[in-house]
Length: 129
Image 1 (cartoon, helix red, strand yellow):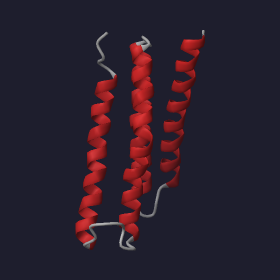
Image 2 (tube, rainbow, N blue to C red):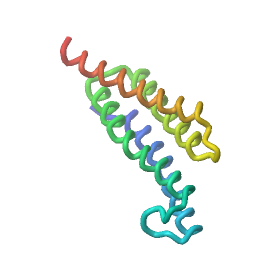
Image 3 (cartoon, rainbow, N blue to C red):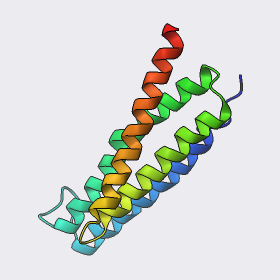
Image 4 (spheres, one colour):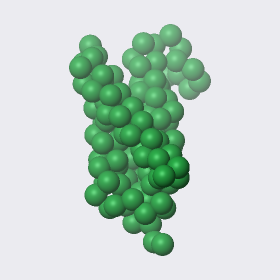
C-alpha cells in the first residue's frame, strides 16, 4: 500500500512548524535571549505556540497514518488532515496575536480535539468491528 495523503499533510504541517520556529528564533534575537524566555512575555507566547503545536501534531499525524494504513477512504483522510491543519493554523494565529484572539484560538483547539477524537474512535471501531 502506498501512502499518499498523510505525507502531504505531514509536509504541510512541517512547513507551518518551521514558520513557528522562525518566529521564536526572531524573537530570541530581538530580545537577546538564547535559553528560556528571559522574562519576555512575547517570547513566552511564541514559545508556547510552537510547543503547543509540537505537543498535538505528532499524535494526530499518527492517527492519520493508522487510518490510512487501515484503508480509510481518501476523503476521510483528507478531512482529517484539513481539519488538523486548519485547527493548528487557527490556534497559532489566535494565540500569537497580541492581544490574543480567543475565539480563533478556541476554534483551533476544538478542531484539533475533534479530529483526534473522531480519528481515535474510528480507528478503534475499525479494529473491534
